[in-house]
Image 1 (tube, rainbow, N blue to C red):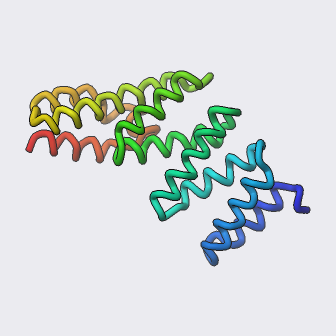
Image 2: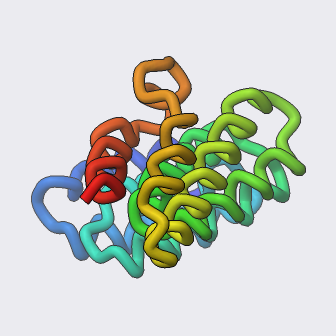
Length: 171
């Protein structure tokens, strides 16, 4: 039944390991055919999580962000946590913007996103201090980021990256 998203996802999954191009094409088709539903969000989430091209991955996550800010489906929130983990490693400024959007829009899980916002702010501040040759100050800023708490490791998953960032600050 072409109007049943469960059927469409079942068909999609039959291509996951055998034909990546077909899988991506079918996932995009699901996102378009079921626009405005949780199926759209699920399709973009799967595309983002499976993407090997970083530019495409970011585009899928940005679409997921737009969907979340409009309708707040749970699958999109989960995808945005993954997006934050990616951004904090590659673009702390964008991670900060995402966390700020989420804190201002989100109705649930506010402590998680406030924690992410604080972490991203510290990353941005520390990066600026490193660029200004103020490594000691950068280390001080990064000491405020907890490595071994539930929010840092489970939701943000940046413990190893933060350790490397701190080591870079000490060089």
